Image: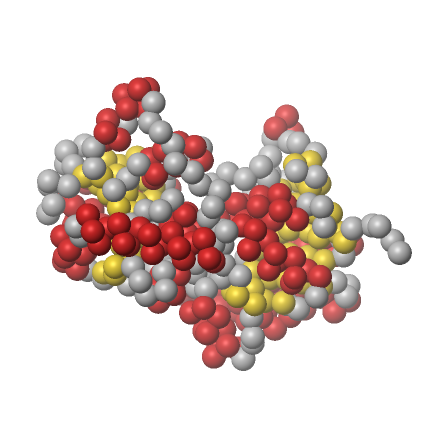
Length: 363
């Protein structure tokens, strides 16, 4: 019997080492947990030559001169997919932007395992043409992939009803996060760490409802909010930054944080985590907060309700968010935190998630 490991390509991400991003974090932990079972080849986006490394955690890294985000992502995904068809045994594709060449898989006979992500076509940031393209890409993905992975029961239901496909439900892990005790230097840089504050982190796009969150805390001047986002990358984010940054003493806007320990420092010392996303599946930031044993308040999206098993506190308007915040006392806060932690330990650890991916690859 051959001792050669199955070669598995992971495509559709910026690559390794992982920086902040759901698919990159997933790639990191799949490689870390399954490196002794499979030979991973991870495709990496455009990187300066002096910053490239050849391997990471036993995974071979392959670079291409295209970016994994923006308009180049389609080219990046197509080129890397063709390369993988000639060089590996099985393909794990994260995202759908290269789906236009999925029909060619009939010539290569290579197994395609696809995690399509959330309901991306529903995001308000896309215009009509882009939404149509994303829906078409989604159709091609579902039609030609050998295994379709959905990361949330609600999305699994949508794919079943829309395309008649039964997908594998595999969520995300979040147990890589940890509590960080603030040092004197940390307290000097972030004075709010010594106070009670509410915390949220998300990309600056309108479907993540940052405007709703900020308007709520304008009306709650006695409570502190710390909000981390990539403010400068969109007009929506820049407008919010200009409107709220340094104008309200209880609101602290921080630019995107890509250092995991620094982000854990701010998250793990917060009083309550507020999750505002609407079009993610099982959002990594939410399961990370649950693994940190934080009480959570979530936007009332069906995906968030599924993730928290209908056991969090939910809101849809600024008024409802204020009511949710005011409903908390030490007793129900502790119960909320314990409930979120129990769900996370049962469902959202990387050992559990990696084993489910291994089964998809093998079978």
